[in-house]
Image 1 (cartoon, rainbow, N blue to C red):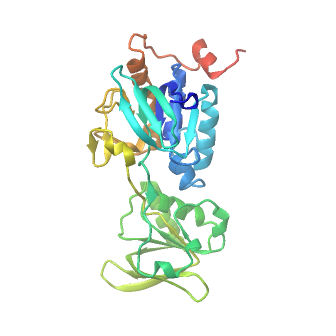
Image 2: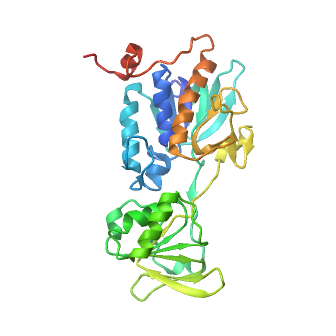
Image 3: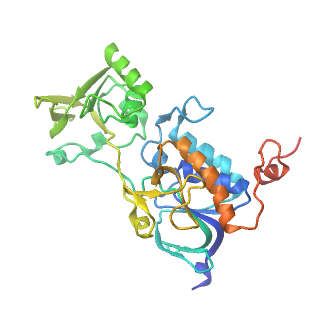
Length: 347
């Protein structure tokens, strides 16, 4: 191995640079542990940055509302004292647990790591949004079909078709109702899969007029005379109808794909990695999984839950990498050790 390919020694390799992976850097740093972060995307932030950077998030403690990209920016600011290494635009291509209990990790850009532990925070894996595949999709202006919102102002004064019934569809319906000319929210059934409060607010908006609710599935898609998009639909009673708009926003969720992680020999539960709830360790000692990619009884896919998992996983990593180290909880408010690690200057 050349000197430039000499393994990077670290306490932990984190696979995934979404919000939960970033917060894992912080929790490890508080315990004096160094992390290197690998992500297949060219930037940090995971789904927040790639799919909905402008999406408002309402359930982060102490933030009544925060934009997805803003949350990532704040997390990056928070972890700055811990000097984590970031290795973006690459996947893990080789993975091996050695006899000494440490891990060899190699990426598609030939980066080598000698890691004490591995933490998988890969969200839904190599995720891709579920796309429209209806007949006629190739006949319309593809620039008018959106699977994420990167420029909210693009939709000002437009007639919007929002497809989906989960949190993303509901959140953007609420957010864009103030600036769009009209919104048709189209879901395949009457029941939504989003937060109860969001469902209630969307139905309020529908009662007030700026939003219309429709149920059905797409049978065909075609351009309108003015360059917009027309969807031929079939409702729950098999009646046919059409909806038209200037722009279509599709929020049908993500198609999960664990990619190479599926070949690591970990116990899986419906394409998710099974973990314990003491420290979110997988079936292989020394490998941990946090965030949307893991499964345990009662699992809820909230960013908030992932933050909690990262805190406990950090103690699990410390125990695995340094089994003789004494473990105790120190509070960032009062601990001089924590202040030193965070770079907090005394009064």
